[in-house]
Image: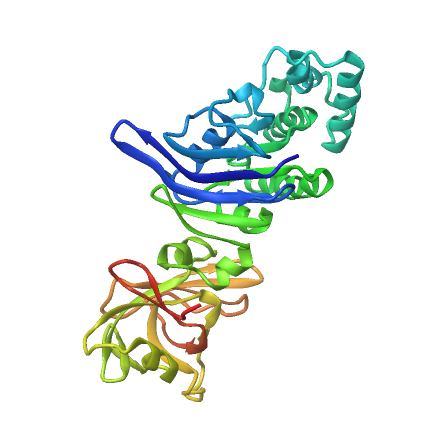
Length: 368
């Protein structure tokens, strides 16, 4: 096992920069997730660590060893791909053993490892089957088993659950987390699924357009996003963004005015008419059923229901601001069932309000 350190890594393809200024260090034994939209550079980073891509500049260390010029087969990493990459003519046991055989490991050691890995992944009854006789989830566990059997210093997983159905994805995600807790191998996991990132990671690296946006523990990033991109990417449903302007000590949201919290106005020193993006998470919106509310820490916003999604324990409501294209996500209890076209009065918790620069997406309130 080993730590992984990247120092100012850049990767260019002709005139296109895929990743730039990538710097972070993963301590030995931690589970880090690289997350971001398609094309953000997360798979390029993973492939560079694996040795399948060559960094244009910068330094890459696995443990204390600089590996920039070391070929992939000598880096002591194991990679699990999205498409499993199993050998169709081999049995489960042969697929798990293949990497060890290529390294000419003693046959007795190979046999012991195959048995142990198969037991840990609940594959012991499938060792004589071939991939075409397995379900998608079973094939994915075989791919994981092949990587685990090698006992590498680092695991690299490139969207390994994306081909599974929803229930199997949830089950396999839990198995992955348990396996990491048992094995303690440094793991780097790439996904575009923010739920996977939040549930699996010790630390998350949020990427966009080839650059790091924020690094931190999942709950820390969720509660204190660095910018609007991070705020809207992490969270399901995502943070609501309300275009607004500053008008005489109030926020103007599509013609609806509500007072600005004193602490916000004092810190931001806003100009008359200045444009802003207000951010608030769906769980910090509440349907107001009477006219009484705390005017010091809350504000009311009138919306029209567009779509209602009953989810059992809770109901997700999508509502629009009259005269605007802005749509808000509202989470409420499962027994609340408004109809499309209904008008609702929403209570915003101003203590949970974020303010972003509409041009750059930078967070301007709250300050960390």
